[in-house]
Image (tube, rainbow, N blue to C red):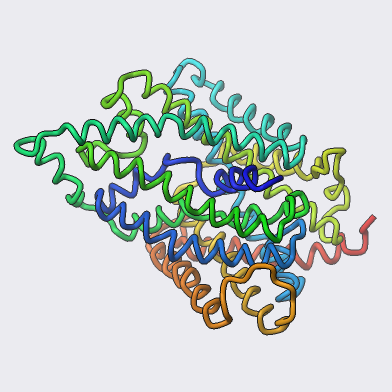
Amino acid sequence: MGLIPLVAATYFMVSGGPYGIEDILGGAGYLKALIILLVVPLIWALPTSLMIGELASAMPEDGGFYVWVRRALGPFWGYQEAWLSLTASIFDMAVYPTLFTLYLGHLAPWLVSGHRGLLWELALVLACCLWNLRGAPAVGHGSVWLFCVLLSPFVVLTGAGVWRGWHLPLHGMGAAAHAGWTASPPGGSLSLAVLVAMWNYMGWDNASTVAREVENPPVTYPRAMLIAVGLVALAYVIPLGAMAYAGMPLEQFTTGAWADAGGVLAGPWLTAAIVFGGALSGLGMFNALTLSYARLPMVLAEEGMLPHILARRNRYRAPGVAIVACGLCWALALGFSYERLISIDLMLYGSSLVLEFMALIVLRVREPDMERPFKMGSFPVALLLSSIPVALVVYAIWASHDEKLAGMPAPLFGALTASGGVVCYYASKRWWAKRPG
């Protein structure tokens, strides 16, 4: 993959467009939501992308973050890094086929009625696995086209919102509409808004697992990370700002309200286009994340920590068996309902991110002479920038202490899930490490 396909694939690994950020308004209102969406990438996404740029340029190997943590902290913690990412994928990947069928149902309800919805979800899993079997370049170039089609309706929506806002009168109802962007929703939760924003800005390290399939990774990765951060932030902020300027009522702007806003501002055709884009969002995110996650069992198998058959590649250099195995696991998880998805995702992903920042700092100390084509700054700067996302992860875990998952506090559920990696590590060493062939 070159720069543009890598940017597009990274975009879908992190974001599927503005879909999902509506819930931030319910906790913060327009003004605070826009501030959150501008500040969170600076203190959460940017330090993460700089860390990834440094480590990916220094160690451009398949497996990405797993390789970094293993080299810095040893094989045990490297395995825990892979475990946290793969378990998070079970909770995460079941959502995107559901999102696909949800929006497809808005276009034609009969298509997803009864068991047809599950069949569509299975079809999406199958289609993305087949797409990934064609290799990383196929996924990257496909992501470019999906990116353009997905965001096209929002370009029109933004223009329509600005046009309406410009022509609102400056008195009476028009003045009230213009002033509404400073209002706060009743019963809102600023903490929830921050957590939703963090969730919408996470996943930057996923692109690191395909390093050997990227052109000139020491140069391409840092550029791709920084460009993708800017694109994701702009794709969130600009449409939301246009809706505030257009005076769209805050109480009407909840999950799914992008389609309603399109109908109000431009007509039913834009509603249909935005709904279709929502289906493409689920497809694009599942497809790009399959590219990332399937490389983890492949690398573990190459090192004798999983059955060696998972390391096999096809003629497109794609790990075919690992892709099929992951697809089967995600398909089996489609029937489960994962409440509080944001909390468990942030806990598992956040814990893996903490290990990556630890790897960065440890390698700076232990291997100061390692060739680093890109650096996130001097050691004090790297330490400072690393501490901010780590503090946000701690905050996210603390903020979920009152939530329940499977009848227990969410942090306890997350800790039990993470502890499974310890058991699996020693089991893998016993059963597979001696059977590399």
